[in-house]
Image (cartoon, rainbow, N blue to C red; front, side, top):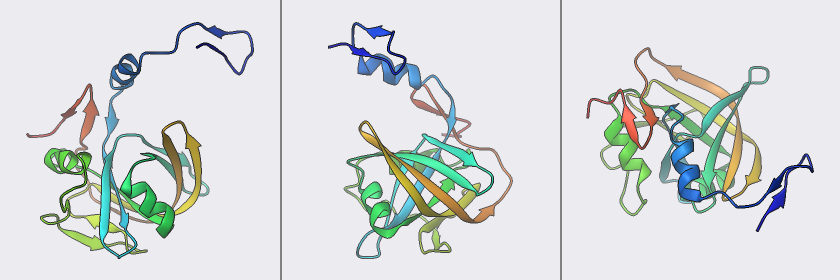
Length: 172
């Protein structure tokens, strides 16, 4: 099942193998963040994300990509706000905890404080950026959430890096 590119002249004869796509994209090193907000009952929810980037300086905008099935995505859409917690090199275990299925209380042993709009800021993170949801764009099986930065709490340190299926810089 082929298709035509937006340029109209490039024919795609075979769809890309999702495994090859994931492995190739995984070769790009990225920082690691935990996106947090509150659910409809006011309880904290969050998930580990490596698809995160700055978008604009004026106004201060960033983007994060969340799977359509993500409980955190649904909670952000409902609440209209979220917090980006940029993890430090020592927080590999925390990144793994928030990357798995959300059946357990991920926040049970995590020190948090409420941010400007109430989304949890994670203790020990290099930075916590409180954002109001600016816009949301569907993109395949994910949504691109654009957030407008409202407040930043930051400390110096080494970041946690994710590449080729593992955390680099982590002490674990």
